[in-house]
Length: 256
Ligand SMILES: [Cu+2]
Image (cartoon, protein in one colour):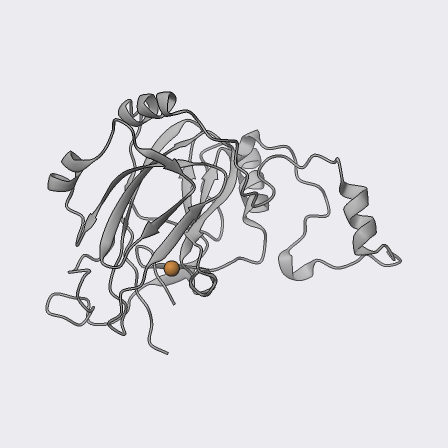
């Protein structure tokens, strides 16, 4: 399994967007989301990420929890993620193409070794950073991105290697779900979704019948986002931070 700040992301029984909309409607926003693990702002355990976990100073063993990893955001928040590649337990450092749904982000920094905010922030490109929805986290490197959370919904941010995402390398950004439309009544628990008695409709029928229906902009995992912003506005957003969330990522594999 992979861990991000010691959390292995696993899918819950209920779609996270349903959990989020209900909590936002009942409790207001921001709200605590049931059955989720909020991502800590910094790694709970710090060691030399370019060395094995059992190297001197390391934790000595894989540590962590598993659940629905979330970052709870208000619309308009400017967020900085620092992704730190860490050597896996088998000694290999892999690369990870991290992809964000719902938003594009600016790649403001990238470097070798272990991220050091006292040094590396000064190397950021805040003048004309590239705008992307995927960035490679190379072996034993770090990368810093900034994103304007301006698209209400539940958006997966994850390594795009299929085996890695299935092994838990991802998190969900939950952005202002109180602004979503109510979900359709037939959004059920994932494990309980089934045809109603007497429902003989085919998949094609379902596709046709739902076409044109509006389910809000956060009910799926659309990769289309809301389009690309211009470089002119990127500089404005990148340099005029209203709120900055620094998030480290530490990756761990469990030996099977
Ligand atoms: Cu990966």
